[in-house]
Every structure is written in structure tokens, then in C-alpha cells.
Amino acid sequence: MGPVPDGARMIAIGGGKGGVGKTFLAANVAVCIARAGYEVVVVDGDLEGANLHTCLGIPPPPRSLADFVANREEDLVKLLVETREPNLRLIAATHANLASAQPGHFQRVRLVSRLRQLPVDLVLIDLGAGTHPAVMDYFLVSDDGVIVFSPEPTSIENAYAFLRAAFYRRMRLGMMTHSVRALITQAMDQHNERGIRTPADLLREIETLDPGEGVRFVSTVRSFRPRLLVNEVRTAEEIKLGFSVRSVCRSYFGLDAEYLGYVNHDPGVRRSVVARRPLVDVQPDCDASVYLQRVAHKLIQGLGAPGVGPELSG
Amino acid sequence: MRSLVDETHYEVLELGREASGEEVERAYRMAQSTYAPESLATYSLLGEDDAAVLRERLELAYEVLSDPASRQRYDEVLDGHDDGGAAQERSLQLPSLESEPPAPEPLRLRAPAALPIEGFTDEEEPDAPYDGARLRRARLARGVEVDQIAEITKVNPSYLHFIEEERFDDLPASVYVRGFVTAYARCLGLDAALAASSYLERLRQHRSEAEETRSWGRG
Ligand SMILES: Nc1ncnc2c1ncn2[C@@H]1O[C@H](COP(=O)(O)OP(=O)(O)OP(=O)(O)O)[C@@H](O)[C@H]1O
Ligand SMILES: [Mg+2]
Image (cartoon, rainbow over all chains, first blue to last red; front, top):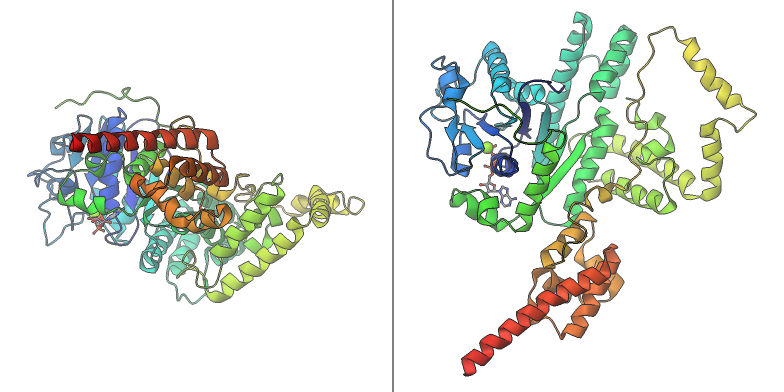
């Protein structure tokens, strides 16, 4: 997740579990950031369950990422759809090919580099559920990866599965030697023969095999800063869960995760989805909207003043 | 990325060296709940045995840091002038024993000095007026439940809920409400004068509007 000097900043919103609120959060945070004056493109990364357009109140767009995947359209600017917000555009994921929805590896590389070249300040990707390689790729190449979970065991379980997948992939990418990369691949199998159970076990093995790679492993860990977002909190105790998970990320993975924020459970969310309007539009003063604003505010820190990005043409 | 077992007591509790006694207390309680049996935060990632090891490590850290005398002795060990400089010598010798490339700084050597739950407290404009929702957000950001405030302030928890929800018609005379809001705000360390005056202003407005509607009804 190294920042790229030129090009749009990329933020991915993932978290493993279906239905934890990734799309709702992506839509609302994108609206907040656009209203702060930044040029934003929000991308529906869920080719198998496209619905981001619905949260933004847009009918299913005829053009989408599916056209890029099917090699019908190379120019992402042509896929941009206007929203009700002047600074916010959408790339939808509608009408994907049911036979092969996901882009292949090289297509993903191309997609990501083109997303970065979009003439905007920020690209926000709403990821699908699960840990498909495509999902993990978008998460890992982004400047910020947000992991969404709710205070339920099932959601925590999937969030950790997601984090484990992201962690090992990221570490493997950071290693130079084939033997250490192979070792990491082995460690990704929880029942591996070497008995590597935790990242700390893995580091010990790497240090024995190749101390230089051990050093590289540690610095790769340090450069990986997932951001945690707890959705649907109902009590102060559940808000504290974010700090606890951060602490567990440190003790288990050695990761310095950031607790980005939380959004409370609010029946208004469902009503806003039903009305196909962002919550921050329908109920701008409710607690959940205030929390969404905070999250948006934190995400744009370090982005520079709005309005300095090049103008969109076409 | 050393395991918690190799970390200093401060690192274990995610505290800086300058942490106050109260901060040690709160960090310990927080960590205790994080690694408690059946904790949601460790679910599916840490086995009960792993969590038990971490809990033991926590206890040790807390035992040392919560007692000023033992904390001071520990600090001296960390600073390397406990036993005639033996520790310092050790730390000077260690790196030269290794001919490997220089190790990067250990991960998260120093945790933020602030208490974990305080990471969220100052996100709203400090001088902005308080309404029920802002009081609730401030309470939640500090990790406090309504019942805990009720216990400390002895104010009936129903009234505290009514205050947060701005159920003005269910609240007693304003002189009482002023007392409740002041107690609530003090309990959370908020600006109690600002909280009481701005909340009472909302209450007054609501009640005068209600009064007006009533007199219209009569007229
Ligand atoms: N803070 C909240 N309060 C109340 N309801 C919520 C909240 N967040 C999400 N929901 C409910 O959960 C539903 C699912 O949310 P959403 O579609 O954003 O999940 P998702 O993570 O994108 O799911 P998928 O993985 O299937 O894409 C929403 O339609 C809404 O009704
Ligand atoms: Mg979704």
C-alpha cells in the first residue's frame, strides 16, 4: 500500500463477510468526500453482486466494468456514470457475464493501473464478499484498505480470514527469493506439514532459512496498515471491539492496524437503502451520518486541498 | 515482530513510558477484555491456550507497572542502569554479535501514549452546543454505557436515556434536568457548563413552543 505520487489515490472497502455494509458505507463515504470538494470515482468491484448503483439511486447503467472485462471497452472514462453529486461518478458492475464474471490476472493489473490514471483525486472501490484473488488484489494494491466488520462472531471470523489472506499474499509479494515465497505459500495452508501456525512461527522459519529475507519480512509487515471499520455498533462495548481487534492484529500479525471508526446500527439505514438514497442525504444529522462523515474526514487526511486535480474531460 | 512474550511491559499494554497510573489501569482493563476467554476480538484467530499465555503476560506487565516502586525498578532496568551497567553492556554487545544485516526497528516499539478509547473523543468541535445526540456520541466515544453513568451520578438511567433522546416531555422540571446534564457531562469529562446551558436552552425552547401550541388550542 505504498502511496503513488501521481495518479488518483485508491481506497478499497472489503471485509470478507457478505452483508456487513460495505456497499452502504462505500456509497455514503464517497458522497461525503465528494461534498468536501474532491473529485471521486466510486467503483463497484463486485461483478457477481453489483448493487452500488442502487445505493446511489441510479438505475442499472448500460455501461460497466463488465465491458472492460469482456474487452469491449478499454477506456475507463467511457464507463463513468454521473450521479446526483456533481463531484461523484460511478463505474458500475452491472450485467456481468455469468459464465466468467471475474477479470483474469493481467486484466486486473491493467484495470488497476487505469483506475489510478483516472483524472480524479480519489478512487473508492467497493469489494465483493469472500477472499477471491481478484478481491485480494484490489485490496492490496490500494493505498488504503478498509476492513469492515460488525460485532458478531461470524463477521469477525470472516474478517480475520480476509486479513490472513491479505497478509500472506502481501508478504509473499514482498519477498525476493523463491524458497521463502514457497515457504509462505506452505504457511497459507493452516494444516501445513512444517507446523507453521502463526505469522510469528513463519518469521522464525524465514529467519533460519534466510536472515536477509527475515528483515525484509519485518519491514513489509510494518508497511502494511489495514484500517478497521466497525459497522452496526449498538453499545459502547461494541465500539471498543475495534480497539481490541487492533490489539489482536498487533499481537498476532505484528500489524499496526488503524481503527478508522465505527457506524452505529440505525433503522434509518435500511429505509435509506429502500429509498435508494444515501443516508447522509436523507438523514444528514443522525448519529450514523455523523460517524460516516468522520470516517470520510479521516480518509481524506493527507490528500491535500480539494480541487487541484485535473479536470475530467469526455 | 516479536511475540508479546518478548515485549516490554509497556509494549504489552500498548503504553508509552510516560503513561500515568490511571492510563496503566485503563489499558490493563482494556487488554483484559480483549484477551478474555470467549472474547469476540480473538474469535477464530487465537486458541484458548494462546489467549491464556497472553493473559498471563498481561498480568505480569500490570503487576509491575501498577506498583510505583516496582515500576521504578523496572524503568531503571529498561534504562540500563540497574546493576552497575551490566544490562547496558549487554545491550551494547548484542548487535555486534550478529553479522547479519542490521535489523529494522522492532514493530511498534512505542504504542500511542493516549488511552485507546480516547482516540475518538475530540472529533467534534469543542465549542459547539450540546444536544442529546452529541451527548450520546461523546459517551459512546469514551466507551461508557448509560448504566455506568447512572451508577456514578445516581441519576435514574431512564432520565439519562430521555436526555439523550430529547424526550423533553418525559423529563422533570428544568432545575432537575440542569443537575442531571451537569452530572452526566462531568462524569464524561465534558465541559459541564457548556453542556448544561446549551441543553437547557433546547429544553426551554421546546417547552415554550409546546406552551404556545397549548394556548393556541385554548384560544
Ligand atoms: N449501520 C447499519 N444500520 C442498520 N442497517 C445496516 C447498517 N449497515 C448496513 N445495514 C443493512 O445491511 C444491508 C446490507 O448492506 P450492504 O449491501 O452494504 O452489505 P455488503 O457488505 O455490501 O454486502 P455484500 O457482501 O453482499 O456486497 C443494508 O441494505 C442495510 O439494510
Ligand atoms: Mg456489497
